[in-house]
Image (cartoon, rainbow, N blue to C red):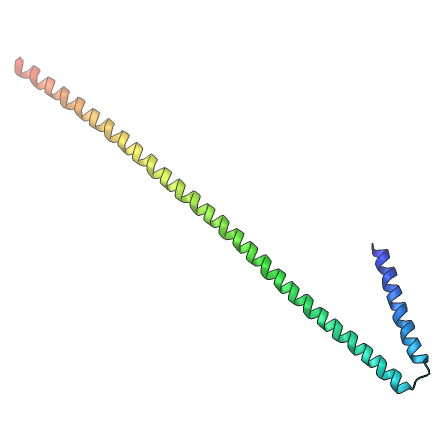
Length: 128
């Protein structure tokens, strides 16, 4: 690929040099030839400026689009993480409530057994 590029560049340079020599050796006045060359070079410079400005604008637009896409993906990921956090908090709260309810039931059961045992002991002492 690099060899093809070099060949094309060499052909273009040769064509430009040939055109310049043709203009210089033409049977026109030197001032007319110089004006023609100056106009041609000015046209090339303007075309290069236009191309550079167009490329700069394209790069700015590409960068802006890339930034917007990255920002969108980041926001999406942040929202997903936030959703998972909310689910995890809700699940933890539900589990904590289940454990609290289970502990309260065990406490109430133990309290009832102690009360029944105390009542049985009290009856046994009174009947003796």
